[in-house]
Length: 104
Image (cartoon, rainbow, N blue to C red; front, side, top):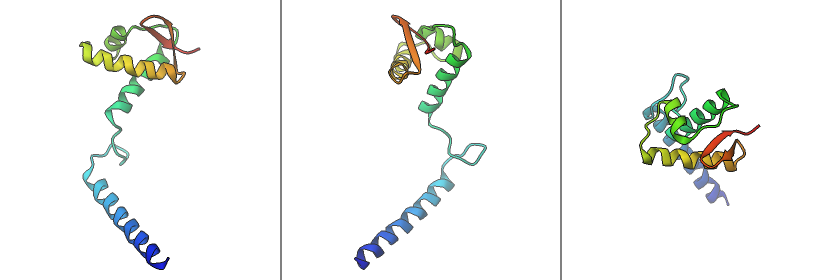
């Protein structure tokens, strides 16, 4: 038992050292925290757009134009997937085919 505890403590010390090294090498934002991943940023931009225009329903192309995002098919398909996920999670409603709006 003592041996297992010593191994676990050594592993924990190694992990703490690794975390420090990664924190020094990783790019940071203004607050010293790691920059959020692009996916989280895209989701946040989408949710913010729906919050600002809560009474409006958007098609994917309209949402991309509002957010200044590219309107090529692969990019819009990724957004369709994100909108579907937000709809399943209850953040958005789908009042008609291909239209999304903030759930009231």
